[in-house]
Image (cartoon, rainbow, N blue to C red):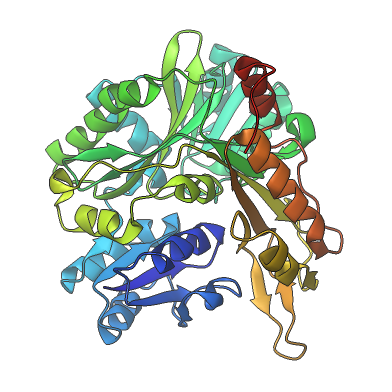
Length: 430
């Protein structure tokens, strides 16, 4: 199978890595890719938002499956252009991708499907904003209605800050605050059959202890030893399947990756948001634990054959990802700094630990790999349990050099400690 992946981040590197390990993949291409993806896939230049250009590239490569990674191309209709050319694509139509592209649309779908979520107001002017903020009180949850690259949400007890963000958004969704831990659950769907993956938890705040501004995600881990064993089945029955059924009923079937961001509240599971693609950095840990070859799963979703797919196989172990961010991220990140230690990680820590590139490029003059974005690298490791995976990932992180960079040191620390206590003093990590 010849596969083309669209995108250039660590999520796409994780997808490309998993696809490169699939014996059924005979040729792997990525557009536009990055310096790390270049090691496992042939890179091509393309405007990822131009559906016609992406479809032309896929046709010229004789691609038998196209995987669209980021949300912006999906909302722009890239998957529609590929389907119009008869090319199997993993990713929803522009209309179905509004589940992520518009928070208001998602709320409407959830209401129709009976999906549990936070109460919310959609506001379009100053008076409506003030009324909604007053109705819910602090802490305030303010969400830009449109795409904002994972940074359009403000959660604050500062009324002035909440109001400022809301006024800057234009159309905005203001909703009640949901207590409890957050969980990310992905599901692969062909528009009818829904197959959930393993849950993960990510860390949005920039610094240890969940301090600092919101980011696109500073790390993740899977599995969640503290979660109810019935959680996945419950979310499939109350959230994922009803949402897919409702979209099909509306004539806008959703085929691709449905991502439910969940809060495990004192009143039960509630949906915080939906995304229409794999999440970053959760994809890095979920795919690290998936034993079933990836290409066949994505192709079955793209061609409406998920109902005949064998049950997915998963590693019993754990995976942890730590994001290394550039100087001043998430504000105005500095780019162009040389990255060192990548070969050392590969030589000394692989294959249990490895580096997935996010914002990187190859400097033509020096030949160095340099930073080219805010989140630069996702260092990922596996282990028999979270403690072992954490040990390996942070050992690998120490080998990476990037001037001015920062990362969190507490990814999965609490979950690993709780799991160790539960396992008892006699438990040993392999």
